[in-house]
Image (cartoon, rainbow, N blue to C red; front, side, top):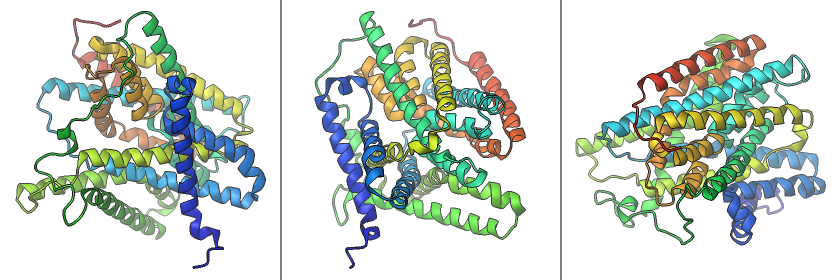
Length: 470
């Protein structure tokens, strides 16, 4: 082996650096009171440390080619991580919900999440079109659709769609723009979350802070009697890893086959220029779909007794997803190229501030109508998730509901599942809007109509409650 070839060790070096960043950030967060109180996830702190070091030191000591290669490799990590993480979550075995109230709440939670995506898209597209035709003609007209991807979905999706806009539609710096939006979303979740939390605490509307460590996971959540043993001929964790990569192999096979088919010209230029980039960019959606298919296969095999034990383990799959998403977040923030945003700073800040404020006001208003009995934890959780990720939402809920006495955390999980179904039209519009200015305007009209429909369903059919938490 030729150890002088840096490319041989490139993957090891990048993951080693990301690991050091995570460990450093974890130490700083534990030792520095300001960071500990900020509610910023460790992975976000690590990402900003990586970004600062990359843009101040690394960029000065390496060539432009090496700097670009490193950024490209980080985007590769992001691209595959988001799909692998979604597959791990998709393979989890869900308990059958028999409570009709829980089912109903999950539906309205999904509508709330998707309606927020739509509102973020409306604000993003409207402002982008307005700025494109006034002060910032260099701004890409379809950039507004990156707002629900960055704020509502997270850095993985924002990077994938930003890269799609960059490589297919000529949005220079599109991937960086999407990553920067997602990163700023974490700041929104943390800073506003802290301000709101301290306001409620001073008003004596929250339980006392709980500082001791608590075990929130029961043994039954780690292992169930009908599952395979933890260690036998093969380790149980190895099985979980193998299941995730098996599903991703089928996902890759589908994407590769579809891309080759479209390359033949079966759908003309539309298939090659529009459908193919969407299929490649939405690898996480296809990964989730294949995970759900395999989960149904496992359930079917158990029903006919061809599979006598349950192989997926929810606890371990959660840990796999957490591991993947932590590395993805660090890589996503570190991969931002400040140079790509040099002409877009003003429109960027206009977009993220406007969408952040609208998201906060809308969630505070709509949550009181869906979850009137526990509006405060529901507001914190939904705002944290719809500006950051699910983990950010959980952190904010824990601050106002430390014992998880309300169903707010379940609403995040169940709502995220139903939102996949309701949010599919938005994903289609993400690939539709950037084709041209006309398509952006049409997309805006469609999103407005969909938002009005979702909001009317929430207001008309949502079960009313006699008790309200103000």
